[in-house]
Length: 69
Image (cartoon, rainbow, N blue to C red; front, side, top):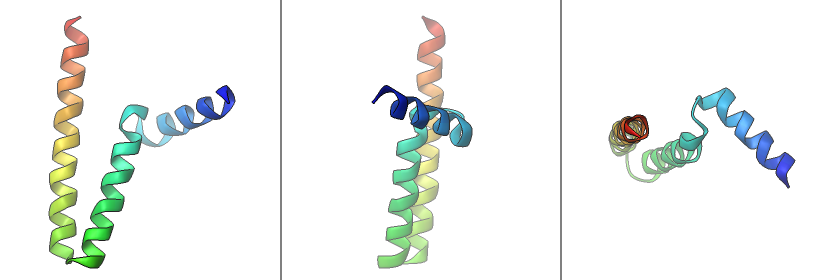
């Protein structure tokens, strides 16, 4: 089981740089695609932009808290 975890961590590092953001980013993309399909393209785009800004802000605040320690 540990090997599977290590593989996913390395894949996250390879594709996203920060594996902590890999799952939220994938969920955001899937949610924006679903919104674009079921609602409208504008709703999907708005969700994607707002979600990316939110994830970026969360990452900045997390890094700031981590460097203060």
